[in-house]
Length: 162
Image (cartoon, rainbow, N blue to C red):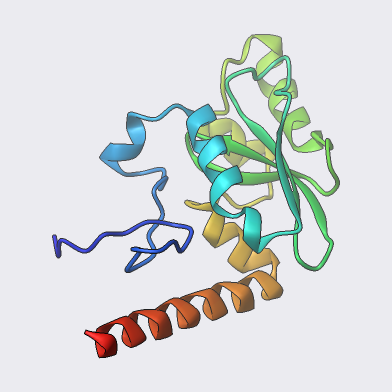
């Protein structure tokens, strides 16, 4: 470990950006999916037009859902699962992507499973919200790069002042 303080979003004192909720890290397994959804909502709020946690689906109560509007004003409904983050609808509150899982598992399914997702979903699972946004929103990508550049310039100026 480099000992560098890493946090997102860029805040005074931040040095680098990292995802604090990658789905495959040991640290992540200690967080609930709901906590991950709260982190997502907080962390990318300035890089999208809108993001809000919504009520979970009755058949998948352990799968947090978020409404998302990109900087291009494209609307999505996304789910935070143990496999990653996935688009389940192309408008706010649209949960059509969960329908196939209901058909496969019936109403007793407690969570999304890898097998069901492969059988019924053509959508990609993203390890982080950053990966999903990078894929669907060119303006996010630009805003992210600008935020990094601004932060690096700020750090350079702080170093020069010392």
